[in-house]
Image (cartoon, rainbow, N blue to C red):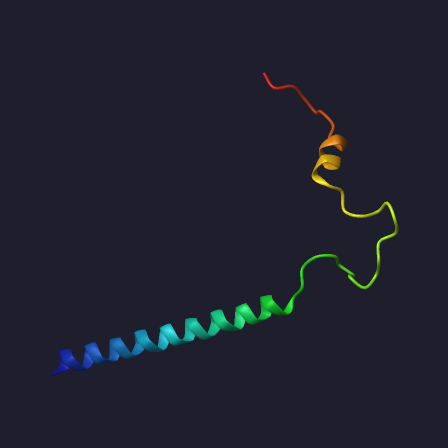
Length: 69
């Protein structure tokens, strides 16, 4: 009888832990969805010529810092 109660209590604790983790994950997902990542101030427009550089422009600006042996 004691074994049955122990198993029931363990199953209940596992179910409660699973529910808690599920709720915490849902809360975390809502926080992430509330933040819009990107430009720090999207309402302020960038002046012409100051947009994000393209990958080819980034590669052109890289400097060689050393040589590969």
